[in-house]
Amino acid sequence: MTTNRREFLKIAGASTLSLIVPMILCPAWAKEKLIIPGGESPEAISALRTLKAKRWAMAVDPSKCRADCVDCITACHGVHNVPNFGNPKDEIKWIWLEKFAAAFPGENHSYLGESLQKLRLPVLCNQCANPPCVRVCPTKATFQRPDGIVMMDYHRCIGCRLCMAACPYGARSMNYRDPQPFIGKINPDFPTRTKGVVEKCNFCEERLVRGLGPACVQACKEKALVFGDLENPQSEIRLLLGKRFNLRRRANLGTRPQIYYIV
Amino acid sequence: MKLYNKGYIIAGIVVFIILITFPLWYGKGKSSPPTLSLDTPAIAQLKDKRCIEEKSFMRENHMKLLGTWRDEAVREGNRLYTARDGRVFEKSLSGTCLECHSNKEQFCDRCHNYVGAKPTCFSCHVVPGEVNK
Image (cartoon, rainbow over all chains, first blue to last red; front, top):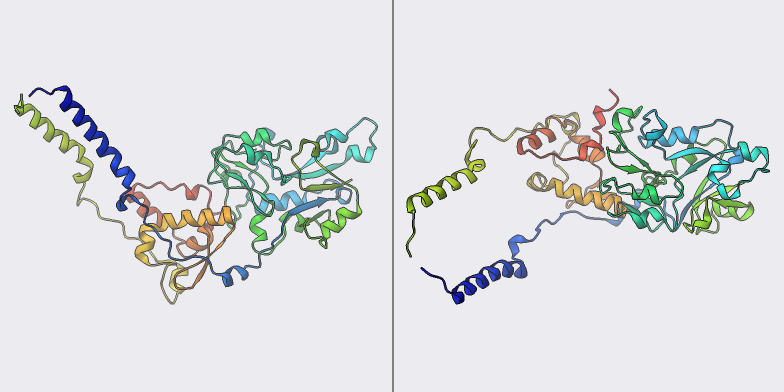
């Protein structure tokens, strides 16, 4: 059998059509059929007593901090299964202490009072209103909720560390190894992370759902940390910020951080 | 139309079909699906031994249900699931699923191993009874 040009083109055309047509018609058997039978019910949601706000924020008054107190850090890292790898290079931190000069490089100078120079203030993710980490995340693993919390979906994190490069506060840490063996006591109510995932403070989103305040705020006996809704003019944090002079870390970068330091 | 080397071609096609269907017929009947244990204290206490949805739905679609739960809980903040019969559950693998199915090795793993599924859920979501030994 010899195929002439005309026959060849016919066969080629028919083959192409047979591939394209099913995709255009999108047959019923190619569609996802699953329907989740249940859903939401308003009564159930109100039963959770979730704390809600238009804009969560925190005020920190480091002058109230006792010297060498790490209550907030212990509480946070315990609740959130933060591992301790035992070396500063791999350190995972959600909330930690920083010297004034490191936390506020723009405000630092050689003639600063000794009390400020010695001060070590608790720093954490600033839950920026204009978060650079969210902008750079290629998988949308980091996202901003309507209430302002900059949150991570660890399921989506691919460990590219662009967010770590973007964050001007060093508030993000990478799990270079499997963290589970390095967690002192695993809290079964909160998932651990896995190797190759970046993590950071989530403003205790999982506790707000249950009507509890953040773990660091609850653990602080000196009430140096105040948490609340900035959009509510009657909230404790709003009244406090109205009364006392406060600074935000590296606010000139335009990230609009939401942790306010009363200094 | 004349087919040259008919014998070789037909034999070749037969060998090809046998090889490509090898995984489908090899081992058929040699192994049986694992029996999953429902013998846990939490399930024993249940008056009405029902999972959150129907058994057949859960068996086929638990992974899709969990995937939906994950997205709704993490990204939208909806943490409660109201089942079709009105019962309300928290969307939580460790807190809801493993509360009853606390025997992960006899329940989850048996079937996952049988079908060769390697879910990564448990690299982060801990089994409550297995931590802090």
